Amino acid sequence: MTTKAREKTQQIYKADQYSYSVTWSEDDGAFVARVAEFSSLAAHAGSQEKALQEIGGVVADVLEDLGATRSSALSFSGEAKTAL
Image (tube, rainbow, N blue to C red):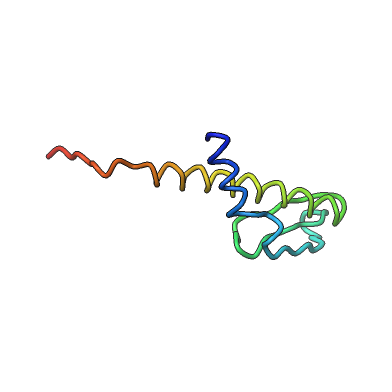
């Protein structure tokens, strides 16, 4: 991803604009942080603060990947070839 594309992605997607929760899990013996908008993501840690920090980093990475994918999709030439 180019620097310009990364800057645009950071303007569109911001990890601090999502809904987070942190709960204690007896099964895991740790705090588990989740983000409502990405239900498959979770982060485990020994403290609430660390779990929240971890899930924030995961979301930032996912948003960066989504931005890269979006940039790639926008640069598609419009030409597709198939073989039968």
